[in-house]
Image (cartoon, one colour):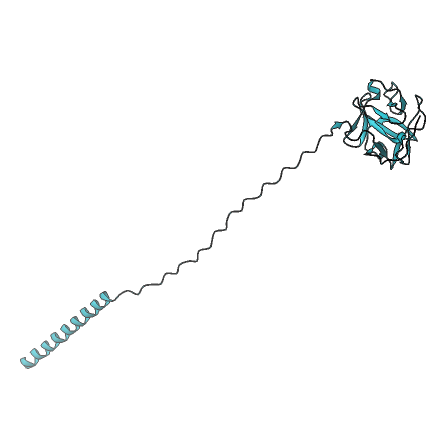
Length: 205
């Protein structure tokens, strides 16, 4: 082959290789200088914190009141109601006369006072409710001249029962048409309410 032709072919090959090398270098530069595309960052939604709820402190239950023994405080003359009737002293001033219950009429024989010695005194007779000197259940009550013995002293307990200061845990009780003492219980035949009498009839000796 002619030497010129060979030289021409070699020159052409060198030229082509140079072009290829320049082209690849430019492409590499282009790759290195291309700005990277920023990947968008998704910010997670912030869930607002649930405020802590402090549980309410339960109310402390009230301590049941202990029954208090107190004398009647109020008007001097009062009516003592039981079973929708009134404690009544028959119109007899003799010692030993027994109280009864009767329709309320506010007469003096239905008016009572618990005096400063805790005695139940009838306004009409001026006598006191008296327990004979026995503490047995069923002992019948009567009136007697007032004195300072505990068997004539009563305490109005918790606004309902008359408790004897003489016979422990014995209450004024209406049973079989008689007032007597019996062991205290919650029956209506031991429950008294206190009422101030309206002006009504009076009785004289």
